[in-house]
Image (cartoon, rainbow, N blue to C red; front, side, top):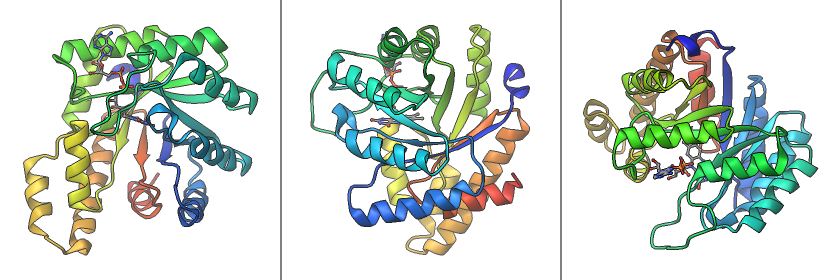
Length: 281
Ligand code: FAD
């Protein structure tokens, strides 16, 4: 963890582009509230095949025009080279200088391919098209990406993204701090020296969290799962316990040298800002 420890800490919040007008209003209130915490940036997710292309762009521009640093996610699955060229050029034309580059996931049941197979190819393409214009973040997986046949393959895939020109990484969420520390040590042993910021998923709703975790391969440790299940419909207890667990996790990560935190906000300000306050950030 040595190379991580000496970095300036960066805190960021992630949103998804709302579909309905009420969602736009709600998200606006959320980023205005979180903006008071003075984060390094806000990021906005991107649907497979460009399905949220307009929503991601308009959300990023609205946040940026309010004076904050905003970074769009761009995913390459089910997209053509030409459409990605347009998306990237559009962000460059708008003066956006920060991108989170991903392969993306298709909604279940859909089988479509695009011209790029892996995120490393997208990173290389962005560098070829725009040189050093963008700060490029990529994803990484302390508990291993669910489609990787072996952890070593996943580490090699991560290295390929850095070698292609990514500047920093944000992890998939996890509730086991040791997974992060081991991952960072393994990455450093490969000579990779970029900030690896833990992705943090606050706990608000057990069934939603269980569904997400099954899809993305994030483990909910048994002691957390059984406790959450035991609360049944008692949402107040779920939220209170979730805040304790996630605050302790963040505290351990920061004490251990993590170079910041990236919150998966689910477009809500409350849980992330409570954790932030409890950490005394
Ligand atoms: P990759 O790095 O391409 O890896 C995908 C799989 O392929 C891994 O199993 C990897 O080991 C393997 N692999 C990579 N290269 C090779 C190779 N050369 N040979 C063999 N195997 C290889 N999804 C969205 O749709 N939109 C978003 O906005 C979004 N934002 C995200 C933000 C963060 C911080 C994170 C952690 C995830 C996000 N995701 C998003 C989810 C992400 O798209 C999925 O986890 C997806 O399954 C993998 O994306 P990736 O960029 O890590 O892919």
